[in-house]
Length: 192
Image (spheres, rainbow, N blue to C red):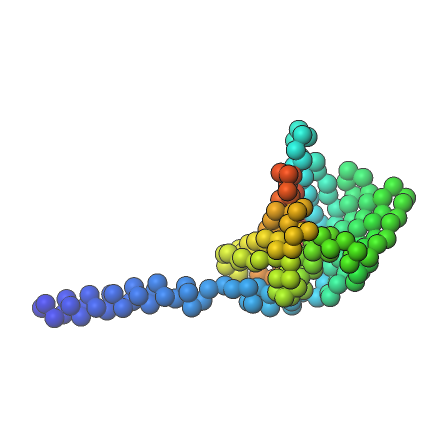
């Protein structure tokens, strides 16, 4: 009778050990997320963004559309509160607002290029591009993940404290940025 109890206890302990070890073996990691993200070669989405600016009561809201075409084209077209656009094509950034357009090379502004690389690197599933300017930390599961980016470049970290991207499988559904000085931006993305 004691040997039967001992055998059942040993079996239960073995099952518990296997159960505790299983999450480590099946952990969702950065290469797996990057592989899922890399499958999306293009996409369109609606966005709503709230900016929390020190000294301003309440958030500043904007809304519009986002589009992406791998490997390096991003577009943000704001419709509300006023029409404006930001288009990145390779190394070229074009800003349009109130009938005026400004074009510049991203590599002339390393801190801006770092922010674009954070988005582009995530969307194309390129961990090396992300890790050029950020320390990465992934949490969650395929069904609900967050990717925290901490700037390592001094010019970028002088402006941006952190970036948090969130999503599900190969879709980015949110971007939160915290800036040095306390300002913050929270964007919710709804794929079309």
